[in-house]
Amino acid sequence: MKLYNTLTAKIDDIAPLNPPRVTVYTCGPTVYDYPHIGNWFTFIRYDLLVRTLKAAGLEPEWVMNITDVGHLVSDADEGEDKLEKGARREGKTAWDVATFYANYFQNGLRRLNITRPAHLPKATDHIPEQIALVEQLEAKGYTYTTGDGIYYDTSKFEGYASFARLDLDALQAGARVEHNPEKRNISDFALWKFSPADHQRDMEWDSPWGKGFPGWHLECSAMCMKYLGETVDIHSGGIDHVPVHHTNEIAQSEAATGKRFASYWVHTNHVTVEGEKISKSLGNSITLEDIEKKGFSLTAFRLHVLESHYRSQSKFSWDALEAAQNRLKRWQEIADRRWQVVQPQHFLESLPTGPEESDKTEAEHPYTKLGTQAVAQFKHALQNDLDTPKALAAVELLFAAIEQNGMASFYLSALTQLLQQMQYVLGIDLFSDDITTAQKAVIGQREAARENKNWAASDSLRDQLQAQGIGLRDTPQGAIWYHL
RNA sequence: GGCGCCUUGGCGGAGUGGUUACGCAGAGGUCUGCAAAACCUUUUACACCGGUUCAAUUCCGGUAGGCGCCUCCA
Image 1 (tube, rainbow, N blue to C red):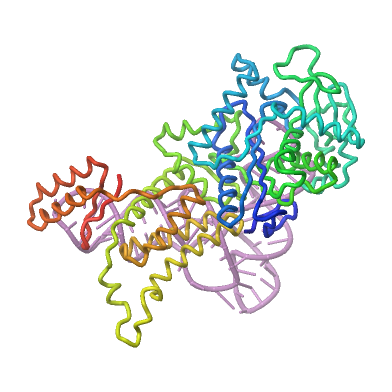
Image 2 (image 1 turned 45 degrees about the vertical axis):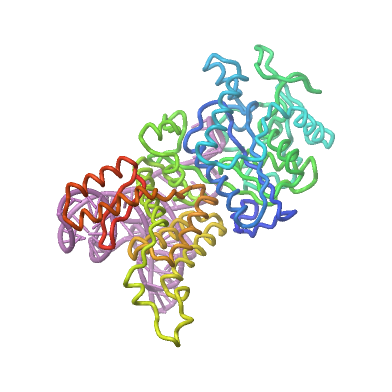
């Protein structure tokens, strides 16, 4: 299994600390509003990562946090807490907002067939752990106090800039936002923020430094280490987290433990809509409900996500989603043909005959090999940095052969294997049930009616099946059915 | 202003120093009782300008355009 590692800036072989166990931490959602498709792109891709690790014979233990406090409007710890802001907008408390959107998020995981992580810890359930981490950092001299909180002194952590390859001096010169003037370095960030004097927060806790709430970066370090140990194998998140959030997580965690925080860092790129990034202010935050409202299935959406590589900046458009839905429909029809094996005459003729060639059976036939190749290519593509577009091309390789040559018996094993892989690794289930004996009988009757050119009877039988959700198409080899 | 990425045919999207990616859509044709498919064909695809090379879409340099992060955001 190979993955691009932000830490080393190259594609690395995954070697977990304690194989076959592999620990995976993902930065989850901040539950202050409905997630948009960009968020879901990310979570589908991490689901893919976990499923692929499993398919590679590893035993992933996946933890995804839920941020329900402390994520300020700016990632650099300025501005208002998103939860408190959301609460004001909706006329609820921050606690209500967090609960509502956390539930919505977990529902979304189910709807999109995203593997449920082993743990989905909430920041508000881990305040003591976070306070303990700040105390550790304080004891080691990494912190200082300002009027509004306890800050981390990034100049004390050697190599702070190296993970994201930051140019701190340039950052200083280019800063466009007003920062807390008490900060010693522009990159310093809050570990613990004091509650404001002028109003009462919904969420606040006592701490050795006074009443307040934890900084956003702190929760991930604390929960990751609590559930997965001081060194996690794979840490993942959106690409936007590289320069600030993950850089700060590394600084906090490694300063506290003196150990490497994560061996592999995996980042997904963002998706654009109409060539622009998704943002609340641009009003292009499409939700799952919007997708369903337009008549698209969430499976089609999932397939669309998998049609691009996770590290490329992908594009979302309704046309592209429609293309994915059409493709999915075609695939479902091919999957149905698992039940309709017909040995095409031209294959039988092309098979070698004669006693001296009796070993050269179907297995060596080029058409049979094609199926084996497709399965191999599929697996290889995914285990090589999650190359889903290439994996989908492998699926097409076999599916096109079936469409062109017919559903011959020697495609059956490859088809079944690919359908299993798609269900297991891609999370797209194309397995369908066979039609009933009665339905098969109807098809037989219709064939007979057609023989007799009794078109009225033939059409009525076809309508009868259509009402049961079975479509037919006539071919020279007979009728092929599919689920509508 | 700083840092980074990208530019492939109508759309989406891989990949490669010389051989069809793939999907969706469009056009023409074959087949067809109807329907639905299927099959075949199809528009000089790799931003532009140089360079390296026997050969570049694929490597190097530059130009133009787009995008992302530093600020709402995965």
